[in-house]
Image 1 (tube, helix red, strand yellow):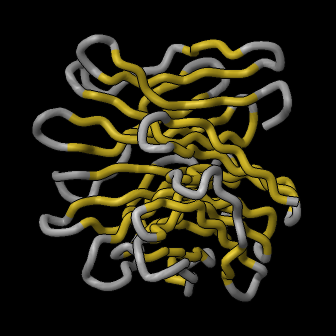
Image 2 (tube, one colour):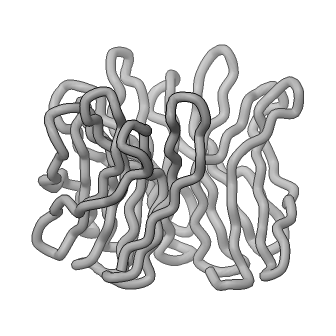
Length: 274
């Protein structure tokens, strides 16, 4: 939100269960903030957070036990985090991987659910009062997973993921979600894990693609008309390199983060554009 106000989410192991973990930055230090969990005997994991102000944040993920995995949404009002009722598509696996809020009354969360035979896209919408399921398309009969979303306004969002080992990008126009043509690097596995937009005509998405037996960074850009591949570096010719998150301040100013490994040790990977 600013150089003196940031929020990060995830989970920790308490010796028995995975529990929500939320930390805040005040400009000088990171501190752990008390965060709730859904179910005393459930694992709880947070995957993404979006803040529109220091007093309004939304975090998403999943909670699960031996019976089912269900969506998890937490809300921050400036004083405490609380669990917010969130819908699920069926009673089996439901997970939220990304969230983006354009205002306190407009958020979109994305992920995927299992329909009994294959993963399908999952999108939920917040109208200031409650979360509801929103119809979202799928590409083909293979698995479709959404991992990241960016909303410029209540009527303009982009979501990214993978469909049958190929990139998947969907667009919201205020009325419906639709699949947008997206490029791939090579014929192997391609996936996009996060997206950042500074306007309706400027977005950047990051992820990975397979090149032989090695994973390489994948970056794509939207210019208002089409998505195109953008060259991105890798650390080590024989190391796996993956990008998981991206944030852009302008069309020519982005930072992306992930990791690389040589088969033995994972190391941080940060790249800059512009």
